[in-house]
Length: 180
Image (cartoon, rainbow, N blue to C red):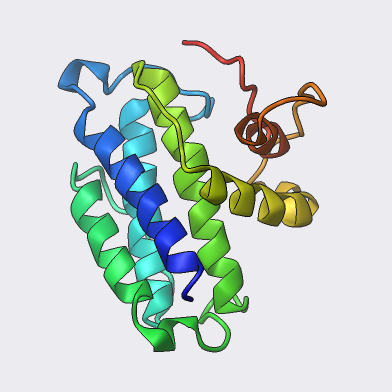
């Protein structure tokens, strides 16, 4: 918990900042996630925050609701739920995974979807190198399982000397060169 909370906090705060900067006229823009426009992506982030908050409370995963425009507030509640030591204990209800695995999944979501949102809306995005390194290490270990579960697309080849962020994006099925 001690090493993950700062990473989760930085990634969450950065993604929340990106969400706050989205203008109304940008909600219909395409994103690197083919099935999402910007509004759908923010709605997905709202659900991710709710789901991981409920999991941290050892409750059944929350269902996705309609777009509410309140991701930053939900994200704060998520971090509060994970800041409790008991959040890290045992296995999740409903998903049957160790809580540390879920925390890493949340971290990957914040980093990858932060990039998606920044890229779609023309915002700068430079996530913390330590956060990216942790997300990349976890994702490389879980990539096949993620693809089997439909969470990741087919890997996108990146140059051998690609940045850790570009490697993370490629492993998750994103093209680091994507432009709107």
